[in-house]
Image (tube, rainbow, N blue to C red; front, top):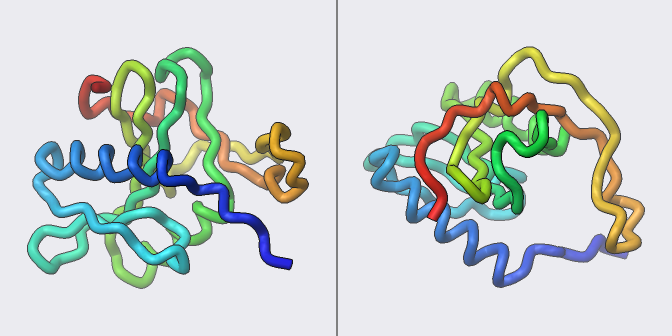
Length: 143
């Protein structure tokens, strides 16, 4: 049996809004990737790939908690894409108070086993990279 897809039209709309916000800030076109790539978007300047992007909305302020989690599966995908293309990989988060990003492959992270428990899906619990908020750079105020 295939795992359910939890992405909704609401979450896709949030991602599209974030991508549109990023384009003029980073002077690039942000293009949605097929699901098989594991990361959400590619940032392009002309036809040149400049970065891979994972976009998330977190309903909290940046400094409300000391860390942010990202699936180890996403980190592994980012590493493979970066090694092949030599492009950067960024985790971009819209918090309640700001937009911020971190290099997905930065050093100085721990790992844990975490995840959602509200959907009754045992696969929601997985290995995650534990990213200190100090590793995020603010790029703008939240809308």
